[in-house]
Length: 424
Image 1 (tube, rainbow, N blue to C red):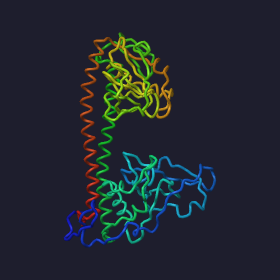
Image 2 (image 1 turned 60 degrees about the vertical axis):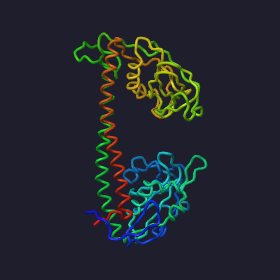
Image 3 (image 1 turned 135 degrees about the horizontal axis):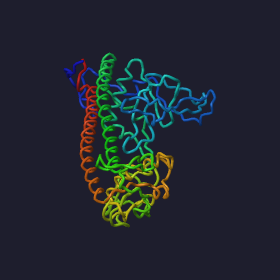
């Protein structure tokens, strides 16, 4: 299909839409629907006839405009509660409550499940009437979200965003004929699939580069840089063989270890010093409790056991962040590369869960490190930094390509559903 512009336009009176084709009809979104309803949550699964699949916002595959079907939630919902809330093909699901700064409420996906299902009370679903194309309306909602229209229709009083659904669906819309709606949605299906395939390829490339980067670092800190050096068995399965002249030493003998005494609420916007919490994000604070070289690991939370920061100078840190410092027989940067890339093996052995458990002191103190000579450590760190720079550059380029493709996809959808480009 080729793309052109329409012969004549008129002002829509809608800021984000601008001018629309003169032949498109003015309506309101709610008048294009045959059904509109909030979801229902019910009770825990009971193993009886009232059990039903219940989709949540966590099931949204928003980038592909559909539901993820690999981990369905089952709820027990009484027939009376379920009346008018069973989903059908062509239905569209809107997240009406929840959201956050990164993904505010208002996201929409198509219902693509083959069985009987409903959606949670944090969702709203709509059925498009037979005079309009549900797929076209999906893309229109997608364009609204991409242009931040949803932000104008929610309130946030208790930390949870709530979409004012009645007002959101009451918006004015200019629509083409059913035939043209179908042509537009078919065109966008094809183009978005092509774009998504390229994005997927780039994302796979990013994942591979990140995996290779980690592998290169792990090999360097456990095997060294000399491929011809004599090796010995380390006695540790995930380490394997190490150079004969290297030592294996537990962390407790290589540094001092302590935790901070601050909580996240102590952060200060534009504070004087870095404030390290249990995430990659560095907050700010007006106090410091440490001045020197340190490695910082999250002690619990979703990042438990992950080393997010190598720090130097004055800073403060969270009460559940471990601070490795005062290094002996190892340089700080070597310690950082080693533990940041290899402590995951302790997590995977079952000492703690990746997302919820805490990392205990004994787990860290007993962690085995391969320790080459100081001279080798400096060379290994220099090698790693060179490799990291090359990998990070390649990853950054691929990520930029993904961002450009996502922006192009949003722009294309917006231009087509608002009539800036004509599908023929």
